[in-house]
Length: 125
Image (cartoon, rainbow, N blue to C red; front, side, top):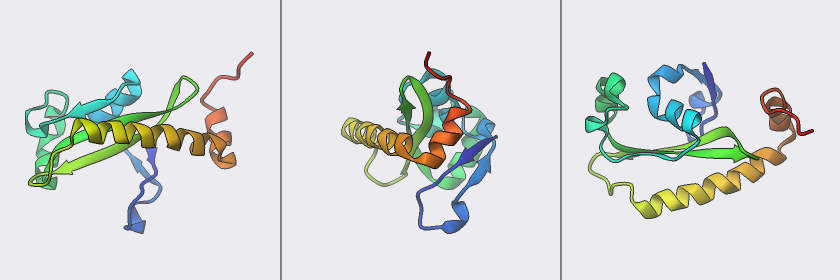
């Protein structure tokens, strides 16, 4: 299980626990520490196990950008592109990386989150 903090107008989406198996794109980003860009969700090998769910959501592209503290991925920025809307572009991905870098500084400076991170990130010697 992963705790999901969502930026959304729908307050029911705050502090959700999700099954990471339902989000292979997030799992891959957390595992690799690299940006995961899926240009076509219906033809993605990575998403094959969950394509039936994605199809219902009318999502055609996804980008997942790691948010790091030092060299450890502590969160991800997750963006979905809807079918029929302008597709996610390389410029959008760069913008997401800028947001992720800025978010890292904000998250790292948050006292509450530093306490949580201290349980997962080894102390420097």
